[in-house]
Image 1 (cartoon, rainbow, N blue to C red):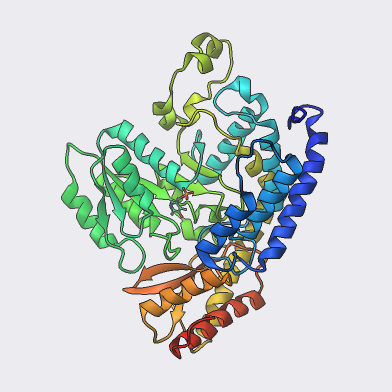
Image 2: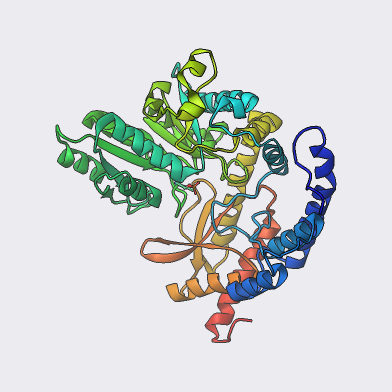
Length: 468
Ligand SMILES: *Cc1c(COP(=O)(O)O)cnc(C)c1O
C-alpha cells in the first residue's frame, strides 16, 4: 500500500475531499438504516452487529481508507444514539450544529496542540480571545476575568475545587443534594473532606438548611466552599443564586456555580434573569456541548480575575523554557492540567461568529419554548402527570397511576425497540421519565408522537401484554 496521505499542508485538502465524500455517504446511509433515534434490539444485537461488521478489527493487510471508513462509519452510525433525532432526549447530549462539526474537522486536520506556542501559534491567540470574551460574558463587571477550556463540567468542577484548595488549604465543601456527582468526586480526587450535603427537597438548594450549615460549620481553621447549580441534572432547576451568594458573603464562604447546563442562558435577553447572580461566584462552570450545540467537548471554567489561575502555572523546560518565555513566546502550560490538548476554541469561535448573540439567543429561546410545548401537551393529556413546568429545557413526567417499575419498564422498552431515548430521574420520591430538549428542530408534532409512543406502550404494559 502506498504511504497514506496526510491531512495538512497544501495537499491535505485534496486528499481529504474524496475521503469526506465517503464519510458523508456513510453517515447518511447508516442513519437511514437505523430508522430511529437509536438501533433496535438492545445491547446484544448492537454488539453482535458491530463485531460482525468490523471483524477483524486489526487485519494483517489493511482494507484501505474508503473501505474502512465506509464499513466502520456506517456501522457506528447505524448503531448510534443520534441526538439529532427528535425522540433522542435522555441527556444533555446535544445535537451538534453542522457548522461546529465542520470547524472540528479543521481542528483535526491542522492538529494544533494547546500546550505550547510552537504547536499552536494562531490557535493559542484564538483560544485566548475566545476564553477572554466568554469570561467577560460571565463576569461583565470585572476588569480582568479569565476562563479555561475544559473537557466539560466534570473537569471544570475539579479545577474549581483545586483552585479553592490552593487558596485556602483543605476546604470544606457544601453542596446541594441536587448537585452533579462530579463535585463529590472532585473532593475525593483532591483529598478534601467529603462534601456536606444540603437538602434540596423542592429540587433546589434549601436556603434555611444552607444557612444553618454555614453557621454550624464555620471555623477559623477551615474555609467553607459552597457549590450551587444553575440547571440541575435531574430536573433542570436553578438554585437561588443571589440568595446563596448573600449567605456566602455573610458567612465568609466562597461560592462556585456549576452552570454547565444553565450558563448559556446568559446569551438570551429573555432568559438571562434566571441566572442572575452568576457573576457573584468565585468560579463558574459552563458547557457549550449542551446548550451551546458543540460536539464534545467544549467546557469552560471562568474566574473573575486571571490571577486566580496562577496556581496552575507549571514549568516544563521543553514546553515553556524561561528564556523562551522571556523572549516573548506565550506560556500556555498553565491553561490546563492536560498537556496535549485539542483547539476546542475553534468550533466555539466559529459558532459564536456565525450565529452572533442573536442567533444563539434564538436557538436557546426556541429550545426552551419547545420544552414548554411538551409540558403543555402533557398537562392536557389526562393519562400523563407533569412534575412541574420546565425551568430550562428539562421536562419530567410519568404516566398517571402506574408504579415506578412500570415507568422504568416503559423507558427500557423504548430503548430496546429503538423508538425513543428518554432519561430517568427521581423527584418527590417517585421515578419520572425525563426529556431534556436540546434539539432546535423538534416540532410540536414530534413531541406529540413521542407522547403517543409512551401512552400506547403504557397501555399495552398495563393490559399485561408483552410489549412488542
Ligand atoms: C453535564 C453536567 C456536568 C458534567 O459535565 P461533563 O461535560 O459531562 O463533564 C456537571 N454539572 C452539571 C450541572 C451538568 O449538567
